[in-house]
Length: 316
Image (cartoon, rainbow, N blue to C red; front, side, top):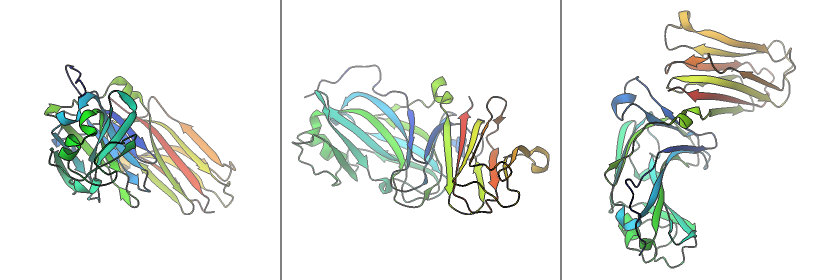
């Protein structure tokens, strides 16, 4: 039996992670109903367009907690639309004597609450819809890919001797569709509340948003829903446009009265410039409120393939 390490806390600081076009970042909002839960800071998970490998989540390091010792979890989140999946948990485990032996024990994304509005999911030893995949799991009585209760993992010949090194809460991994943003507000593991407050390094990390199309006009919006600084906007075009005048614009769509506060930041004729790429750097001085959006527009009269990238940072 593995010896459990005795520390003041078993759980570390939450870390935002995402892949593909998805986003995960710290956010704060005073716009109802987002601030109804949590301590002021939340983690915004934006799944975006789903192709099977796009996901957003939060990683919580765990200090080698024995699998039989992990018994409860609770978390709540606000979904801005009903989806086929909610925010589900993944328990990352390994053999404490040989880190070559590891597994991910995942909760089926469709088994947790996933309705529009505030959802709260609870996890106990009786919770089912848990399946694993891993490396060097010879000796287990369980079958990879088959769903079990958490109690069955705790009693398994192999896994009952392993420890947990990370727990994550993830949103995405769907084959098709679009997952709208979710506000993850609170997490409780083994009756220990996980503090939701970003570090300086968390807030200095750039966040990216991507848009691409092969035809049609470009009309996109960056809407972080938290105070932010616009850092950069890039556009890449496969072939320079040639027809007429085609202005690429970057504008502020203010949350206040449009006729008073909406402003144009950049206008560039991509035809006159024979442009196949264009990058605009903003940075300090370009800070915006949580209800502001940054809109990009371009007629794309010649139906070029393009990719647009926004880069921003969350403000403290």
